[in-house]
Image (cartoon, rainbow, N blue to C red):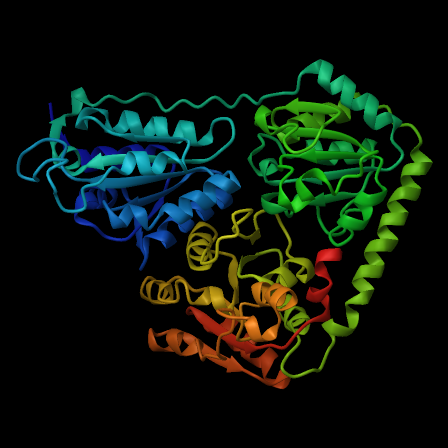
Length: 550
C-alpha cells in the first residue's frame, strides 16, 4: 500500500479528464499541484497576470470542448481571475479554477481565519460568478471534487466552477487506497425538445413566408453538428450565426449571411432564436418586429421569454432541436421563401458593396477597413483570429473572412478587454498547426502587454496586430456626440510605439504608418516564427460611423 501527496491526486484527476495543459501564475499555496502535473505529463503554462490564466482556460474550452483549467494562488491570485471567470460565466464557457487557501487546520501553515498570508473568503467571492464554488474538505476527496467540478462545468448550461484547495490538504499524504475517486463517467445524453413544443414550432414555421434563424453560442456545446444543416435543407431561410457558433455555416452556404441582420429582422414574419439570449445585442427583443412570431430555443428555461413574449419556447440542446424540427417540417410556400432569400441576399450584397471603396482605400493614416482587407490575405482555414478591442475589432468582425468553427474568438457579451494573450496562448497550444492572430485596439493592448514575454520565453508564436488610432474610439465617439469635443475626457491616447515592448522581450515588432509598408510588415510578422506585433497607425472609417444602423 503506497501513499500519495494531495497535489499528485489533483494532477492525476486532471489528466483523467483528458487535460494536457493548465494555466497558472506561480504561488506557494498551489505548488504541490505543479509537482503532480510534472509526474502526469501535463504542461504547466505560466503567465504574467492571473486574469490571463483565466482567459486561457476559457479559450482552451472553446477550442477543445473540454473545460480549461487555471491554477492560481490564494488572495490576490484569485481576485485577479475574477474578471476572466465572470467573462466565461456570461459567455457560458466551462472552466475549472483551482485556487489556493491558507491551511484548513492549525499547524505548520498557520490555519484559516488567523490572519495568515492571503487568507480570505474565496468561496463566497466566487459564488457570484460560478456555477459551483466550494472548498475541498480533506485530501482523500481531492479527486472526487475535481471530477465533480468537471461534471458541473459541462452539465446543463456550461459555465465556470471554483475549487478552493487549502495548502495543508494539497501537501498532505494519504493512502492510495483511501483516495475517493469514481470512474469519471459522463453521460452523453442530450436534452431533446418536448414533442408538443416541437409540433407547435413546426406549425408556426410552416405558415411563415419570411422566416429567419439566429444561432448563438450554445450551438458550440451541442452533442451533434448536423441539425442546423438538415433544417436548412428542408426549410431554407436567412441564417445569422454569432459568438461561438461562427463557422457553423461556411460563407458559401446559400443561407449564410453576416451583414444584413438588422434590415432582415425588420421584414421577417417568424424568427427562431437558438442558444442566445434576448439581451442588448437584440435590443432586449425589440429588434424582432411585434408582428413576427418568435420561437426561442435555449438550454435554460429561465431564459425563454426574458425581455419579450415568445410564441413557442423549447428547452434543450440547440442542434438536436434543430434536427427535430427538420425531421417534422413539411415545407410549404417554397417559392415565397426562395424570394425571401433573394431579397435578403440583395440587401447583403448592397451592404458589402457600400464598403468596397474603404476596403481599397489608399488613405493615410491607413483606413481600418483597408487594414482588415490586408489582414484577410493571411487568413485561411487554419487561422484562429482573436478579437481583443472595441472599434477596430468591431470593424474586423464584420469584414474578415474567418473560416471554420472556433476560428473566431471574442470575449462575448461581457465585452471584456484583455482577453487576447490568454486566448492566443491557449489557441496555439490547443491547435499548434494553426496560425493565431490577435486583433488589438491600442487601448486593449495595454491590459496585458507583458504576456508577450511569457509567449517568447515558452515558445508560443502568435501574431498581434494593433489598429492604433490613439483613442478609446468606441467610447470617444459617443462622448463627443453627447457632451462635445471639449468635454471628451479620459478617452484619448498617444500613437505609442507598443511594438517596442515586444521587441524588448525578444519578439518581433514593427510600426507602420505608410500603406506601402503594411503588407511587407505583415509578411515579416507571419514569417517570424516568434511572437510578433505589427502596430499600425489608422485613421477613421465611415463604416464604423454607420455600423449601428446596419
